[in-house]
Length: 308
Image (cartoon, rainbow, N blue to C red):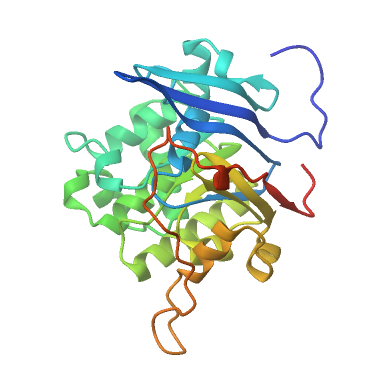
């Protein structure tokens, strides 16, 4: 990091003109087309779009999981607290992961290693920040972290393997691990999607409370607009690898401007008032491959009264 002081009001995470292309046998195929977004310290921001829109690969670039992907070509700028994430050396990037920047994955059963106990995996996470931590110290810190996500039988959980715990319990373990080193930014990729509705709601409320307590900024990746409405301060809508709308959450739900945003909102099933939603917007044709961009997809992004 340079010696230049970072202004206190500067974004913690700033993405500008981010592009991602994959080499294929037909040539390069671009899947992200100039993504720009920012997150301030302690702010909760959602990136929303249907499957295949590019939201998860954006998140994985932020946590440096795409740079070594074979055939991936990344362009643009991604800065975290003044650091150029795309230009970091591997050692520095590894030091950031799990400490200053953490991630909660969509599927807890695949994110946790089935052949190691929770205690062993927790110990590795904690030692990223404190390499000299003893096994006993790490166990005590892990038990404290688990208590923050309302796991009170820590000894049993720590001695268990992931397959011996429920999906909801594993997701809470993942959140506790992600927050154990007090990260400044948490990237949450569809957290709770693999869980049933009641467990998902409880888990997300725990995550919201914990990030609020630690003043952690959050980038939430989601297609669940109900979750986003409860959780996020601002929303970016991504369609076909482009940001098409950006607004404060309340404004987006009250007055969505882009046709794609309106279609997403109309597609949410209504619990009351006759079951399935009415007035769905219908698009002709199929969802196109990333290499195929129609003129109608080139509309400029809409910013509803939100400062960059």
